[in-house]
Length: 117
Image (spheres, rainbow, N blue to C red):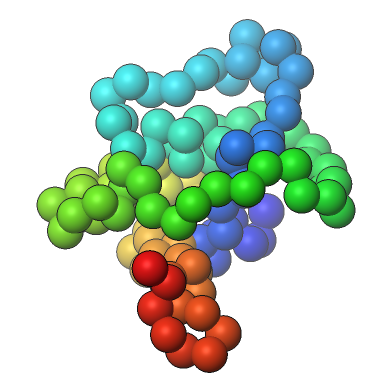
């Protein structure tokens, strides 16, 4: 729970939930076009207090990038929506948002310092 306040986001492509979680805590808020997954995960984990179990195995591989960082406009929109989700779910504030964005930097830089294409 503490990691979430410091910007950690569970890897959602491999987040498996029981139907009861959706029935009790709801699904995605379609008003959030980019951060609906983040908002839902915060609600399930923080408010729903679901227990996460780590599986030390690669279940999916994804390319870097996507809707949230396609352009500066999308990055701004994502950040606004992330902030709504953070406040709505009582996780933190601007520090949490800043930490969430800073945690993504290693995704765009190789260990040798060169940018990821």
